[in-house]
Amino acid sequence: MPDIIQLNNVHKTYTLGQLKQPVLKDISLSISVGEFVAIVGPSGNGKSTLLNLLTGIDRACSGQVIVNGKALHQLREEQLSIWRGTNVGIVFQFFQLLPSLNLLQNIQLPMDFVGKLPKRERLERAKYLLNLVGLDDQAKQLPGQVSGGQQQRAAIARALANDPALIVADEPTGNLDTATADAVFMLFEKLQQQGKTLVIVTHNEALAQSATRRIVINAGRISEDQYLPKL
Figure (tube, rainbow, N blue to C red):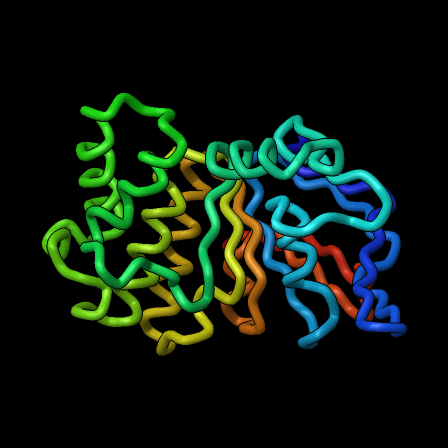
């Protein structure tokens, strides 16, 4: 399969006053279309920073970041925003659903922002995605009226709104109980089987084994890169 992600000699350093803190050091990485990649490793070693580079939320100090055919390091901020809305679905640890909108409206919002679909089709797609994550009976509920697991499933549906090629998630099960976390990862497996590419940061080693590939980030470098056999 072709590569959807290509990182070449990527470095990222944060500057705090006079202090320079290297976070990622000489990262080179290829991820093919349809892979389910779990990124693991100790806290503070660059995992979330790597996700931010893949989504264009942050920029590398040097090196190349190419995602779905676009060299992100060459795009202006306004170009990145448009590209991100169309090409990447982001799932956050704390859901980040808008509390004043019901679940259906939250899922439809990215479609309204990008305008990829005709307006008349957006509501039907939002309903389809709610059904996909098992929340069709909760469409009119506000985020605060449903459980954390249901909010996370709604957040995954929202990430799928514009049918992105790439889905990234930063600790998507960190605030969920074990049973709900297992259900979320089963949903990720289902999306991968449908051809989506997933890159997930997680501290849960057991859940990481659900992926097809496990990458360890340690001290800002890739220390392990292992393809996982599927039972």
